[in-house]
Image (tube, rainbow, N blue to C red; front, side):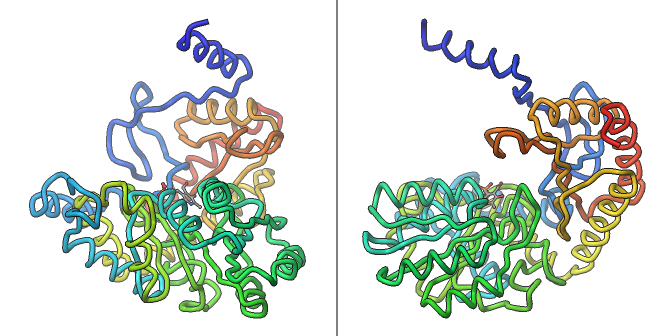
Length: 397
Ligand SMILES: Cc1ncc(COP(=O)(O)O)c(C=O)c1O
């Protein structure tokens, strides 16, 4: 069988199993509603555009200005000749916003996570990771294990007794790094940060938290999971993305104590061997942070929308996973069922994605709704009416 035929055969299998992902093409910017090729206007209930900043005029204009000032590309990695003044401005703003002394940008949070764990850990050290952490953390841990021969452990999701056991077993390791998501992306629940930090202090461990779904989302000012718990400044290392609430383009960053950004600049391989964040993206992300600092009411609106949608969905008879974030997952079990439901919702003009294996474990497929400050009550009521019709059709209510 030729290489191409082998791929075709596997793709055909995905289609027969009902797990094939079809890409939908948007014809305009990301917003509460957008135009989808062949479908017309749809309400988007699946985007990480939590604050509606993807198409915020100030954010778009700042990207354009950066394009004019710095050109299309960086043409280099940071340490050779790809560092622009806008990188420094953005990194100072990000560090201040999340409550850390320094930060360093990457072209994605995936890179930030992969650029962190193998860089910090040596053979005697250990990384202890939550079972439901994002794939980028899982891969970062795997990479560290093979490249540095460090120790690894996984604790049951948000189980503090299990985390403590893993810490107790690791007393001989000079560096113990606990890595957790701030908000777990598929469940929408929040890490037990106060307990994690208390355990870390007791056992002399360092806490790293991926706040991709919490930056711009949690806390009164959107400063993330630490602000949610009134713990700004108490987390050793925060990684996050620029690809969600902060303009939604791409890019990520790692923030931490003063020497961390410098240390990563010296040693982190995605920094050393991959181009710097494009200036247009840096310009938009910087404008997004400043916009958010001036408009905390966006975060309030996001919280109100999430509460409203969750309450109405439950009133209709759905049983979303409990939580208080703008991620509202409706559990369906089989992947094919989640994909079928998302197709029926799309027929009704609601764009929301079904997630199945391998993004979530087998048998835990779901429709993951994500709310935005950009949604109006009309948008949400339109979506809820569609959920009611489709839920009835599928016998879910
Ligand atoms: C928790 C978490 N970390 C990292 C990422 C990756 O972010 P990026 O798109 O910046 O690579 C995501 C995106 O889905 C995420 O949810």
